Structure formats: C-alpha cells, structure tokens
Image 1 (cartoon, rainbow, N blue to C red):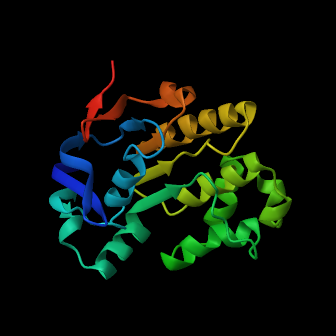
Image 2: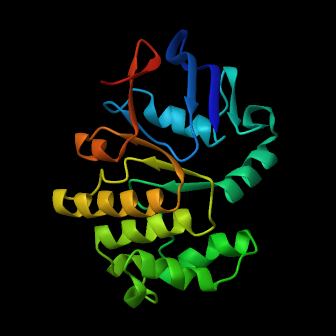
Length: 219
C-alpha cells in the first residue's frame, strides 16, 4: 500500500550536514496502523512530511499504491493530499473564524462532496450538538474530535497523525485514542501516527522507532 525505497533526508546547518533519515526502506500494508515512536527531533515528523509530499527526500522514492509521489509536481502533490490523505495534528489546526460545521465543509467543498457528510461524521464523533460552535469555545478534547472528523470526512485512503494526543490531559487522551481506534479501524483506513507517548501503543499493528537514521520494528 505504501512503500519507501532508500529514502534519505537531511538538512544543512552552516557547513554541517545533519542526517535525519538514511536509506529507509519500509512497507505499510492496506488497513495497517503503524506508530512511529520516539522523542522529539528523532525524525518522526520528517517522515510524515515526506509521506504527505510536503517535503521531498534528498534520495529515494515513496509510493502510495502505484503513485510515486516523489515524481509528482508540487501542484500534483497538493491535489493528491487533498483527495487521498487526512491529517490529525497535535494543535488541532481548526480555522478559528469558522464554526465546527464550516470547518468540516471546507474539505468537502474542495473535493466537490455533499455537505450532508458533515452531520454524519459529527454524529460519529459525538459532537452534533456543537455543530454551530466556534473552536474557541470547545474544550481540547472537543477540538481534537472535530480535527479527527475533518481528517476523515472526505474518505481518504491514508491518515497521517502527528502527536494527536500530545496537547491533551491523560483522561482526554484516552478518549481520543479510543475514538481513533474505533473509527479508523471501523473504516479500514491505513494510518501512520507519530508519537512520543507509550499510551497509544495499543492502537498499533506495528511500532517503529528510529535508530541509526533508520526505522526499526520494536518488540
């Protein structure tokens, strides 16, 4: 479903080159939930950005099924993300001037999909009563529920999650983990989640950690 072939990525700081990923080879199967575990700065977010086509590797290729996203133009990568990838962020990234309903309708409009799906998925995450609320009056857990709904509303094939519980307290984090577990598995989505929290390990089919610039499977 997703394949990385000899993917390398680094950055320069003055005359010094810092290698983040080196020759990474990875296969992720359809419907699999893979967790990238490690401390901040270990390369997890870098890999998510590469998978999303936001950044390009210095070397290597990334395939989503038969699409080599590293060979696409910037516009083509944007369209690919819009249609086939859903994002769940640590800081929610909701548009503050839009209501819950309007935040969900935006990806639907971009993908020419019917607005009725907004009500359907808000029911799934238990927030139909907050449909006309603005993000600033929602709790952190409610905002993350909206963010999950937004990530799934256009029926993407792939979900990328970057520390989705990192800004929440323990009890709320557990509720969000349970919600992701139920909805993502129910819909058979493929998800890659970056986290430094061991609390989410139970979600995973596989847990990978970065060692010597490569991701290895944890026992």
